[in-house]
Image (cartoon, rainbow, N blue to C red; front, top):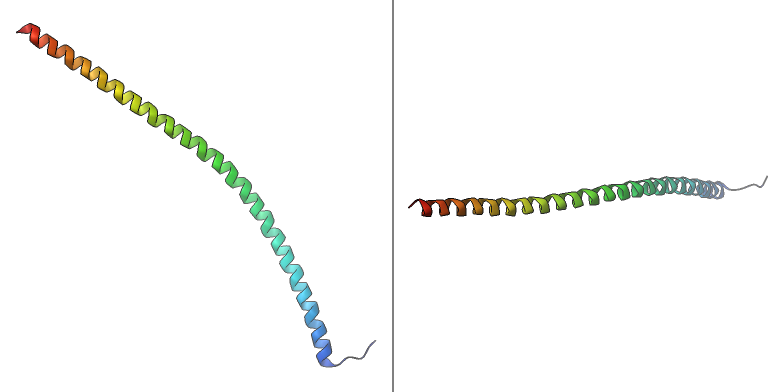
Length: 90
């Protein structure tokens, strides 16, 4: 045993406390990094699903516009036929 003063003993205890707090912080940092890694994988999977959904929506929009143009052409042909029949009837 080495005789120490109360001030020296207090400083020694403070160093031990700081070391223990440092270990606790290190463990918490490892947990945080592990959780961030897990979240990173989940965001990657979500990004893939989101991109697939975007492609489907884009395709649906394209098909909608194609169908709209087709309806307009059919409607115009019907109108042309009706107009031709009106002229023939006179």
